[in-house]
View 1 (cartoon, rainbow, N blue to C red):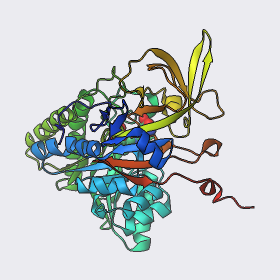
View 2 (cartoon, rainbow, N blue to C red):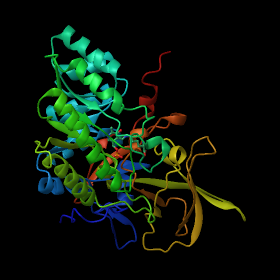
View 3 (tube, rainbow, N blue to C red):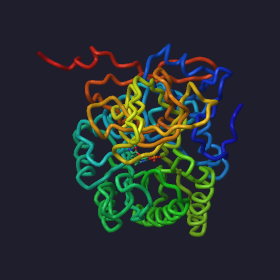
Length: 438
Ligand code: LLP
């Protein structure tokens, strides 16, 4: 069964069901079974949801803008197994470091579908990308100079895109806005053409086109339509400067997802329809060839595919104040509540049929008062040993996890049709001292 790709973004993975014993099942596997087989806490990814999210992009693009490439922003979540599935769905990947590039090169993704981002790539990272002919998205003049120097030194040719600030304010958390003029990312409008002039006659530098990204967790369609118009105009200026059509235009990622019932993200297909319509209009009215459109979603590809399962280890009732549910993970596997005041949807996965009757704070096990995933959530009456499920943890959770308090990172498994496969092994205590020298 394939869920409709233009369906609203769900909080739960699409394969989530409730079994007769009152437990949730994901990919037709009981959550308790998953913990029994793979340990707790556990990141679980639903393959069916990942594939549906990929198609939420590729289906409307096939219809409205056939010359396209969707690259997954790997910073949201990266494992070789995940990349292999994305490759099967026709996606490429955007990487931002040697580590991400190395991981991408270990996957089955075609190398031409890898794109390299970052505002301070080292010379070693640039060399690694140049040796594989990977598209480099140039952030600033120093980087361009470094690329010119390296292409001469190595006798290689660079394929570059220039990251341009659209100078749009998107309404999202301050830390995840990127398009505004004072952002650390990208080249200002006024500085763009001088950079182009610097390299346009250099036979070792091939300018493929422009890139731009307005921010993350964006709920409005309008900024994307504005972005299409602004970037079409920049593309026309670039085309005039180069004296040839521009091959590619990358409009970034950032479409928001539904973490809680009050979140109201747009349909991915609606963003794509509105954005591509505007792009086509801008180019056709000037009788110009449409460039290949690249989109770079991260969160919306993996967010609701992932859940985190924790086991309740203790319940601390402070009479008249609050009741804490202590879980066996916390800020090391999900830093987002502390960093962005991020909200999630919670449930007791072993009491899925029971109504919520009691207010809890769900706290982690780390030595820090702020290690609280949520200060107040109404759940069924919980007991030690119950499984707490947190939905929408597929993006930026494992990716931003740490070993704080020397916690081994949880395992990540992917589920499908009653089968679970390990994508990332649980770290061991020996992993934690692997780099210690004594
Ligand atoms: N392209 C570029 C250049 C980006 O910087 C990002 C995200 C994306 C694409 C993908 O954006 P997405 O579709 O995932 O929204 N750690 C934060 C999010 C930081 C986003 C960084 N850039 C969080 O946990 O919310």
